[in-house]
Image (cartoon, rainbow, N blue to C red):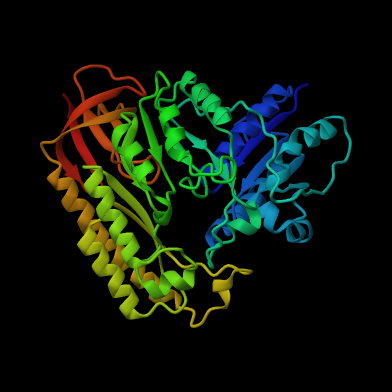
Length: 444
């Protein structure tokens, strides 16, 4: 009888890609994937621990899933991913519910572990490898059939060492994947019905510097742009100091690369940026925004901010507020600073009170909300391209996204049409009105 394996993927989209590859490898090895918790004999949890909340979610998921050993068929619980890498010793001691711990760099050992379990052999409690080792996962992926898009992970690891971040200590040094391998995976995704590819890494802008000796993200975009059947290519995690003229030209000229860029800046105060270990200044950030908008008309800029960083004073906060009001970025996510053990920022003083951090976050988000709502109101009467993602049958209305919105983090476009639309279809829509962060439109 085939052993049934269930996957739970937590955290970022980079984790999701790894989970899809591990799932495909498991299927090829003769095991069965199930979504039914009561049927699963083995559960693999791909954990996250980027910030405290993510860490707690991973722990809670482990504890909740372990209850299936009493109520279902579950016999073995395997933890992999970031939490399993960073806290392998602690998990082994404090979470006896976990039977096998696989660090991220050893995730390709999963099939061997499952084969040992199938043969009735006790598996090692913990399997670890050098964090700089890139696991040899399946070249195939088990894509989600209900989504028209797929994430394309082009690199792993990070060399930036921002003072608040644990990623380099978990994922190791920056490692670009070969262009040929990425193109093969992209073509596979398109054949599986994905017509939007979203490029991700800890930092996409440095792609190729380690393997090709220079930034090669523009070259990669040019080659992806040639794939038949692909409609949109979207860029995430572009650090502002690494955005060069070659990349800007690629976004401006390549027809499948949407005029959208995710550019995490974290703050605008020079003093805070320096404490964060960021390699840019407030003026550098302002200048690259102006340059992007000048050379790529209509570009949508998304960013993430950290408020309440140690030592952030009211003047720093007000500078960030004024920056938002002046530059009116299209998409902004604001996070309160999370004190992570083992990071330089955890030792900085003064640490900001939780209530102050929350108050500043709320103020920033309300400021940004008005900017987004006003911008959406101005889109009324405009025509935009949109990709259909689903339907609300009870309302007879379709759900989609324009180029202005990335999945999971941005808004949606609700589309009226006189004909039956299909998942993944790219259409032209007329914006009728805004509804907060979302748009109401009709097919042209």
